[in-house]
Image (cartoon, rainbow, N blue to C red):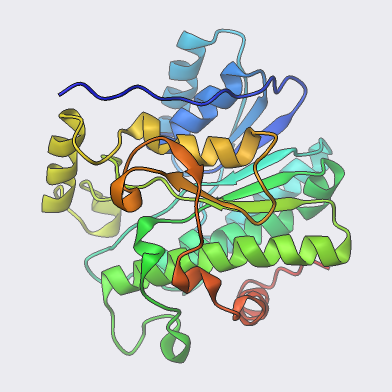
Length: 311
């Protein structure tokens, strides 16, 4: 079945510096490619330099004059995040766009980051919280827009305040929901704090819907030896243009939120098809878990856990 084509227009980004996490494959690679095509200087912090080099080669095959900077980053390590922050601050170039896109999803067994955090909370939320804080002077200098990537999983679930690290019990999906709700609450709290503190940063939120990315595919590094049944079904539907999106279409809400002139501070962007699982991107209402008034509480806990303050 043919899929109805849709896209967005990305403005000229010449002279703008963008940082995209998770840019070595999937949606992140698609986002980095589109930004480079629009003229941005794209910083690609990646965990695997080998995959990063392959991604750079793919972008340059399409856009030979692309301005790309590859950097080492493990979002599951506060030391790695601090090292990247130190490197970019030393370079001193303002950052105009930060897209917090990288993530990990549902390890079968509980795993922890280098700093002892539950892997999904530590990578998806705390890692991006710390990275944004490390880059704060450059974001302020660039009057940046920060776009954080949530998930359709955040339509339900809650922050597990009584056992934030899932030490007493572990449920992979509920822990993933928590991590992505936390991403959303962070994005909205960053918007509020920037407005009240005069930081000059705008912050919004996107989600990709459902698409055949690598999140549910075989990931030996998170204890998943083979593709999940869910990702097989998603690939089948996507290939036939049924309901869900593609890797390319899934990147569009983040690109809309990050680059378009009318994207709102504190706004939420995602696919507009049935169930928000696919379709063209657009503005949407916050899901109930993202309307929580506990953003400030989560922020303070995140500062304590990471040791990164935004003062």
